[in-house]
Amino acid sequence: MAGTSEKTINVNVKVWRQKNKNEKGGFETHDMKGVSVDMSFLEMFDVLNERLINEGKDPVAFDHDCREGICGMCSMYINGRPHGPKQGVTTCQLHMRSFKDGDTIVVEPWRSAAFPVIKDLAVDRSAFDRVIAAGGFVSVNTGNAKDANNILIPKDDADEAFNAAACIGCGACVAACKNGSAMLFVSAKVSQLALLPQGKVEAQQRVLDMVHHMDMEGFGNCTNTGACEAECPKEISLENIARMNREFLFANANEKK
Image: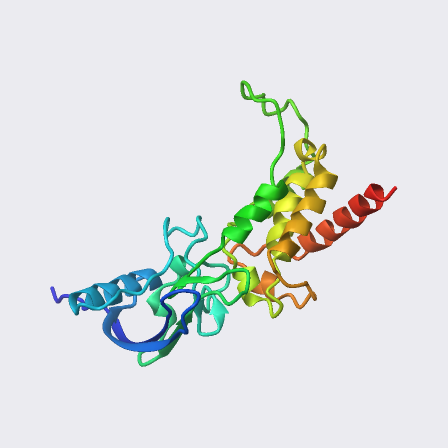
């Protein structure tokens, strides 16, 4: 029986190299020949880095962990789009079959004042962690797990909270926004808790603290262009921003009474 040959392509990878946030960066081009179309985008980078190491050169620094679209670390700006050309996927879920033979692929880090470059494609997204620490939690008494039906939650509310909780905090929304706004991320975290009875007790202080800290971190303002929703790998809805705005206005009005 005749064997089948694996389909491969040749691509030019134009990747951003930068030693640290204080150094000036620039693009470096690498010819990648015989790349399997079944490789993930990050596997292609693994091959590139193995080649660079064998040549005694510094490998390209990039973030990754689960490689299953869960952790949100694989933050690459590919051909002008966060996570690349496919809708609803992270970089690690992107495969080389999404590109054509002879393509030039331009890869950059997230571009945001609130996400300074650590090295090459790796950026510091700890601003998100600090926003969460400011209020993205509930204070409850610990103990044995409660029965599932102890606190009754309407299905619509549970579904909306679950959809908001799908946010993986990758930062694609910030990278896509012309203003570098984090409103989609923050609103998803606010909505996730505001929709559930467990989050109602601290709801007003939570939204005030998280929005305030978001502004402190240097994220831009939201002008509702919708790029964040379009590029979000988990397709988080803009409705969360509207919900957070309502929560914020209500909390702000009550605080001034």
